[in-house]
Length: 125
Image (cartoon, rainbow, N blue to C red; front, side):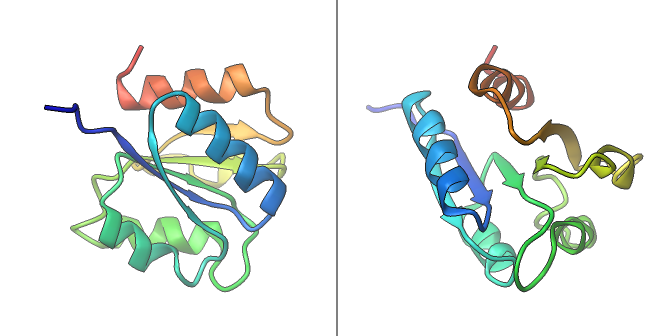
C-alpha cells in the first residue's frame, strides 16, 4: 500500500512564488494544494485538512492575518500548523503568542531554508 503523502495548502497570490513553492514541495514528496486568494483559503483548508498551511500575508479577499484569526477560532482548523511566508519585516511580531503559527519564512526565501522549516514543522527531519 502506498504511504499517504502529507498535505500542504499554499495560500499565495503571486503566481511565480506559488509555482516555485509547488515545485519544491512536490519534489520533496508532499501533496500540494494551491490557493491564490484569501477568500477561498478557509474553505479549501477545511476540505483538504492539510498537515501544514503556508500562508502569504498580503492577499486579495482576506489577508493572512485574518485567515490565521479565523483558523484560531475554528475548532476544526485550530490544530492545523501555519507557516507565514512574507516579505514584511514585521510579520514575525504580528503573531507572537499565536499557537498555530509555527514559523516564518521571509521572502525572497532560499529553497533549502524553506524546505528545512517545512520538514521541521511536519516532523519529517
